[in-house]
Length: 235
Image (cartoon, rainbow, N blue to C red):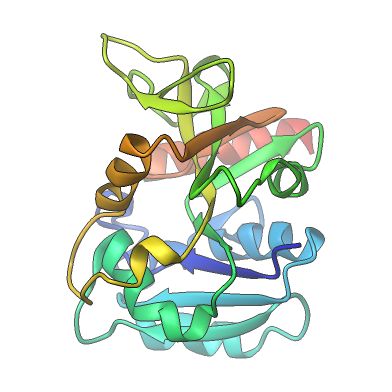
């Protein structure tokens, strides 16, 4: 069982302005809960015991809020106040806090309405012998707040390839399981997790798991309002 997660909460939230003028994107309210609590609640329900949260923009505000959490996973701060390291460098910096076993890596702007518990199903699909990365996927027709043309193609064995034509059927849903060994020889510097994904794709060790539910990307104020309307309607 996976017991540790990294929650990526250090971004500036530029596209979410003006809601992020005085707070991080993680602290934007959606349906009566701030975004980071949507994710922490999912992690708690899945049995995650430790959540490493990286902070940068409005870091004091977010960290003080997290210190008041009295339930759910133990929260450990990975401090990126001095330099925002992006999605790859942030993981490298947090390695001493994450341990050695595979972890969940989660974006805070992803929420969903699930028919089957999504994170437990993702963990059940994880195979460390075959996989370095297992990405949660949403069918593009079961998404809201996403304006792209799809990210990945999934083969019969569950392996992923990137979109090669004008569209792809699946969207990365902001949560993955990752082996940490690919990060250990990398420098603490700004880089995207796509660098690690590219190596995993070439080695045929990158797989996908399709969620059973409806996925929402909450990336800007309009998407936040639409997500709130959905949550009000569907409870």
